[in-house]
Image (cartoon, rainbow, N blue to C red):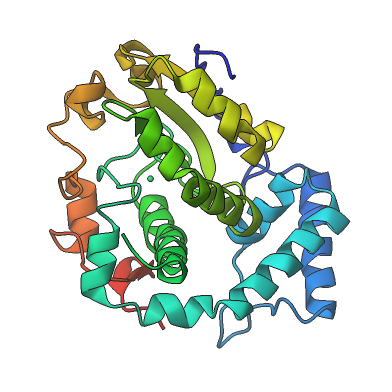
Length: 295
């Protein structure tokens, strides 16, 4: 298990390999990646009239996931694009029923409406899988662009990952066993198709049987991901406040923000200004500084 002490990375460490913080070698690899993908008809560059098929932050997530090894990144990207076509991901998100979408958000990771100090965010099995896909699309097409638009320490660097708090209070070993396959499925989906979207996971209020649970699930993650998971116990506040400003951290976890899981995101003034005062409903994207329907 990863150690309970969570030391925030330095500003330089955190943004290593991100846009605006690339070494000359990484910049060359990114250009080579684009060239290879174009030759494989997996990527189209921007023109005067159209945007690129994939933005640089997305391409860099695949490169970081594979240590900037070109052939490995290209294979994962190719596999992910094949998966997106097989599951008709773009159309799935664009046409997802808004009522069901809002309901799904209450059973999966919820955004508090705030950012960390780096400014990071019973259903038939096939449909359950589609819900997870739609929410990952929402994260990458709405939440990340929105947070990138909002003020953050390195304005030139887009936000492409999240800080997640997992609260295990009142969770039983039976419920964890019941959902083990679902959790494994979600983990595999994210690792394969949405790489490098996880920055830090803080597990709080972990029960005494958590080491047993960890024994079940640790094999689902590669070593890099396992090192991002930290068990903070019953008093996570002192550690979490190193990552998240107290006014942006919910009270149950040692902060000052009046927010609980069932609540809608608690938007700060910058987010309210960007969104016109309230969180939009249903599947939406954030592009060009404003909310739009996906297309």
